[in-house]
Length: 68
Image 1 (tube, one colour):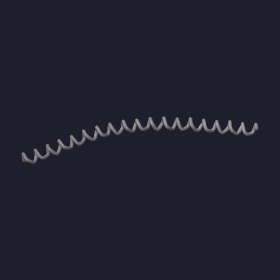
Image 2 (cartoon, helix red, strand yellow; image 1 turned 135 degrees about the vertical axis):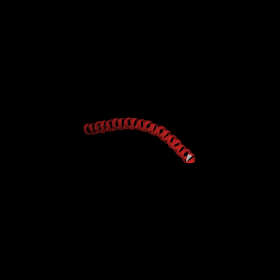
Image 3 (cartoon, helix red, strand yellow; image 1 turned 180 degrees about the vertical axis):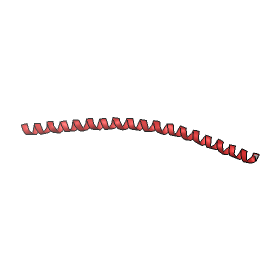
Image 4 (cartoon, helix red, strand yellow; image 1 turned 90 degrees about the vertical axis):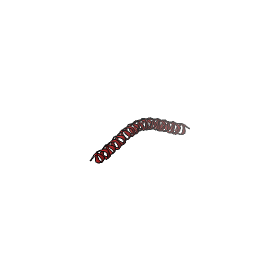
């Protein structure tokens, strides 16, 4: 009976260690996700700004073409 109890304790210890490792990994992944979402937002903003600039340049070029 004592061996069964010891085996059970070892299994519980392993599960506790696995849970602790998974919690750390989960925190790390959530932080990484947050960082990536912020980077994505910045890139989308830069992309929108670049698109607006290009559209503005196209309008200016068309106006120059129409004047000439």
